Image (cartoon, rainbow, N blue to C red; front, top):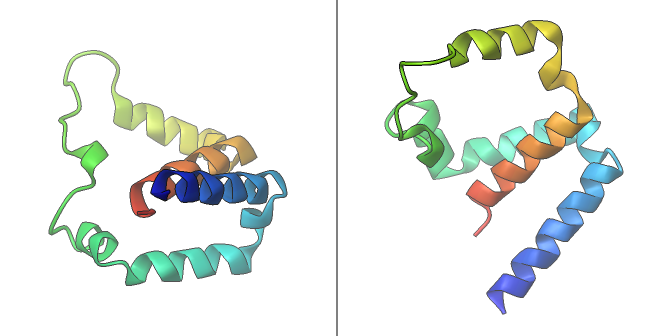
Length: 97
């Protein structure tokens, strides 16, 4: 079934993440090249559409999320392997059929 095939692909990706396959620069370049060939991704980059997660507005009250993101970049939060794994998983969920 389609669900079973997707589960198998996700398991394979999770194993590659555990093996740090995606930490190699050549693998990252290949992933970026494939994403750039995806029509939906090109539309997002060109500003013609927004990703589904970005379609809901960020609440104006409460903590400034942009400031938090800037601090995380500065502090190296996004350089951690577990963050790479989470981002890779979310990208795969968005782009795999």
